Structures are given as C-alpha cells and as structure tokens.
Length: 142
Image (tube, rainbow, N blue to C red):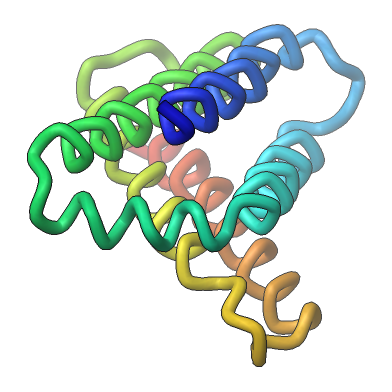
C-alpha cells in the first residue's frame, strides 16, 4: 500500500515531464532537472525503497511493481524526447527508454547510503544526465 502510493506520486512527477516539452529550457536542462528531482524524491523515501527492493528479490508482485515503474518512467522519458522533437518515435527507442530508466533507478537506489557525500550524489546525477544526452546524440546519428 505504501509503495503503491509512492509509485503513484512518482508517476505524477513523471507525467509532468510530458508537458515540459513546451518549456523554454534546453533539453539538457530539463533532463538534468528530471534526474535531480528523481534523485531528491528517492532520497526522501530511501529506507522505504531499500526495504521494498529487498522484498522484491523474493516476492513476484513487488518485483513486477518495480518493473512496471521502470517501464512507466522509460515511456515518459521517451515521450519527452519525441515531443521535444529530439528523436522520431520508434518501438526501439521505447525499449531502450525502459532500459535507461532501469539504469537511472538502479543507480539512484543505492545513492543515499549515510556515508556518501552530497558532492558524490551530484556527480551521479550529472553522469545520468550525460547518459541520456549521449543516448539522444547517438540516435540522431543513426
């Protein structure tokens, strides 16, 4: 129940990404803010998320819930990239969007151990932003 609410609130944040394509911010700035906000949201619920991850290792329903959240995040990310006119719509991009969201969430899931400094956390956020931007650049060339 608590995780369902957490996923619901995260989805509301992700849904906002669909409307940001009209923003005057650059795509890179929006992507940075998206990863940073995701990071901040995960930090707020760190202990709960860690417990849920542990449960999902042995519980199929919890595991599927995590997978659904990754797929939803990937869909919203690709929606943004396509709506922004950065890349054309394709089923391959949708699949890769899910993969990227798994990288983002798994990287951020372990980011908030008590002994990790904020500067390191920011470096991870910047690295994930660069990953998404490299994905966009790479697909523009193909």
